[in-house]
Structure formats: structure tokens, C-alpha cells
Length: 195
Image (cartoon, rainbow, N blue to C red; front, side, top):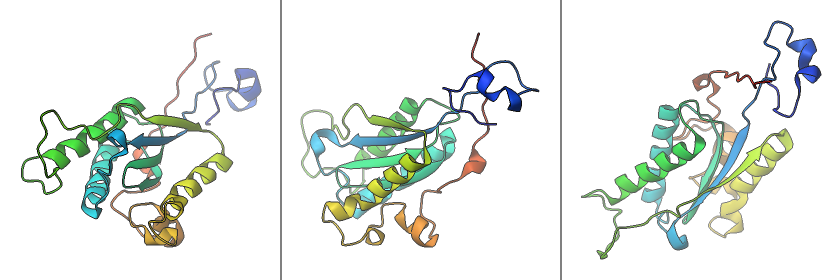
């Protein structure tokens, strides 16, 4: 049984008679936003966005988390993801940013900046925004927000025209590079809270 952390053992005792006398913690979903350094358009080309999605899928499999939704915009991205099984969310986002950056800046990669600079290339802002999603209503709200983002920005006229989001999966079941709603990758984790 999955229970929100705010519920106490007394509230769930009828369902936990065979479990320990501690609350069960459910780790909810995370709505992640990360931005390119100085809002530069590092994800501005289709090739860069494709590379980002390939990197996201590799990181998803490595750290074992479910992706429920995503959109890759020219200067930022949004993800709706579960808690990772093999690392903290900070480690997952760091691996995603670093994995993309290494591939993007690698020798021979056509995506590298045209003009060399004197210092190291910064692709990402150092931090990311994480909004915890506990309710179905918020999950739907965040998915709608992500999928409407390219339309709101004037990049396309309707969400299904933007190839770098999860919208087409929800519209017509079209699979993409990133496997969505893959709950088979997850294992239930039960954490006891000391009394």
C-alpha cells in the first residue's frame, strides 16, 4: 500500500496489520524545470533536442525512474518524473545535464558552438526547479502546461506539431525515444520512520 507521508500509522492501521508499526512513505512525482545558461538557445536545433532526448532515455534506464511527461524547449526543459531508484533526483538531473553537455561539446560533434571561447562552455544554469506533485489534479495540470508550452511560445500552432514532447504519446499512443510511464522499471520502496 502506498501512503502519503503526511498520513500516520493510526490513519492507515486497518491496512497495515501485517506491516511494521511505522508509516509507509510514498515518494511522489517531481515536476522539473532546468534552463540553459543565460537562457541561451542551446536546445534550439532539432538535432540538439534529439540528442537531449537520447540522453534522457539513457539516464532514465541507468537510474531507474519513470518519465510521465516532458517537453524540450529551445532554452529549457520540463520533466514530470518519479523518484529515482538508484540515486537522488539531484544526481539524476546532474547526470542528464552532464551527459548532454559532454555529447554536445564532444570533438567532431556538429552541435558545438561555432566560435571558440577562452573559457569553459557553460550549457546549463547550475540549479534546477523541483515541484513535488502529490495529487492527480496537479499531475494533469503539469502535463497540460508542458504540452502547451511550445504553442504558447509560438513555435507551433498545436501541441502535436512539437516533436520534442510527450504529447503525441498521450494523444495517439505514439512511442518516442523516451519510454513513458514505464512503471516496470520501478520497485516499491518502503521506508520506516523511526518512532
